[in-house]
Length: 125
Image (cartoon, rainbow, N blue to C red; front, side, top):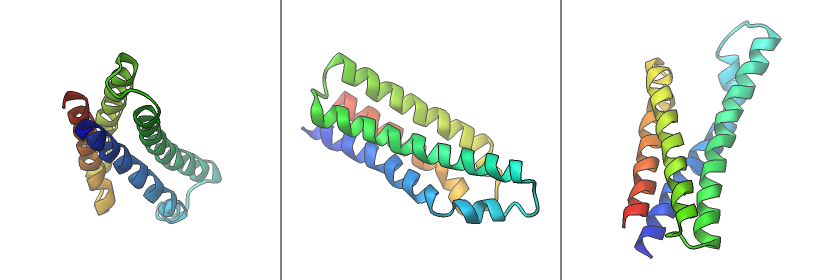
C-alpha cells in the first residue's frame, strides 16, 4: 500500500506539470518574437507534445496502479519505462531548457527527475 502512494504521487507530478504547460503556450510562442507561421506551429506542437506526454505518463501509472496489481511484472515494466522516459526528458531539459533564463525551464529537469525517483521508490517498497 505504501508503494502505491509513492506511485500516485510520482504520477500526479507530471500530470500537474503537463497541464501547467498547456496554459502559457500562446505566451511562450509570442516570446519568440517575429518568426514564421511554420515556426510558430512547430513551437506550439512541441510545447503541447511535451504537455501531453507528461499527462499520458501520469495517467498510465495511475491506471495501472488503480486497475491492476502494482507488483505485477507488467506493472513494474510500465513503471520503470515511465521513470526512464521522465529521466530522458530530464536529461534533454537539462541540456536545453536549463540554459534559458526563464525559471520554469530550469525547473523541468528537477521536476521530471523527482517524479522518476518517486516512481522508482514506489516499485522498490
